[in-house]
Image 1 (cartoon, rainbow, N blue to C red):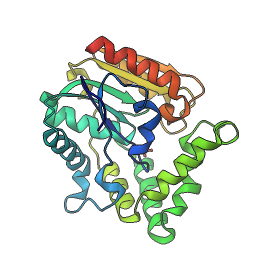
Image 2: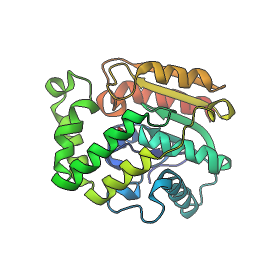
Image 3: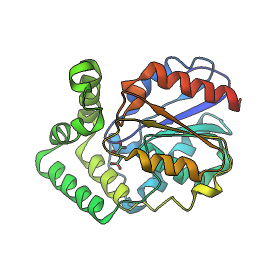
Length: 249
Ligand code: MLT
């Protein structure tokens, strides 16, 4: 935890960890910033893995409780966004505003669920390291491998920090997550949607539709960024987030 003032709770994506927020967190000095690891980084989810997104949302509220934070702006990237939707469902009274970054409201399609099973099998048989090769090219914009070697190195290190059992449970929980499209029209807190223009995992049209369905949402597209806009374009993303946080202060 760092800083003072309004609180922002950052929720990382899969298969990453809290350090994905470092470039952003270090620039938002006027706010209290909390960026925990989700429990799947280091351990399995335990019982009720299919309801894992709810468990992770409840974990985050326990973090807020532990720090005596009544309400926070919740900023979730991708899987972090799925967890943020569960916070909206279960703990809306703890949320001041919402930032949905490179994420989607739809549940997995049938093909998407099959792909989760393939990844689960891959990790069970070949370990975490197999995810680096499989996922890394899809996480960043196509040009990033050439132009941003330090980002690639950071993403690799985050993936390797994830334990195989936690990865399998996170994939299972995402596969079984509920659809949130019908939740969107009921979100009544200020919301910012951030989308990387070159996101290869989540179609930009899906993010545009999500923003359009949330009554108080604004949408910002980040050029030259893929699925990890806060890492790939930290300066631009931080400016956008900072402006939004000022507007909801
Ligand atoms: C993430 O970045 O959190 C994941 O790619 C999301 C997903 O696989 O649906």
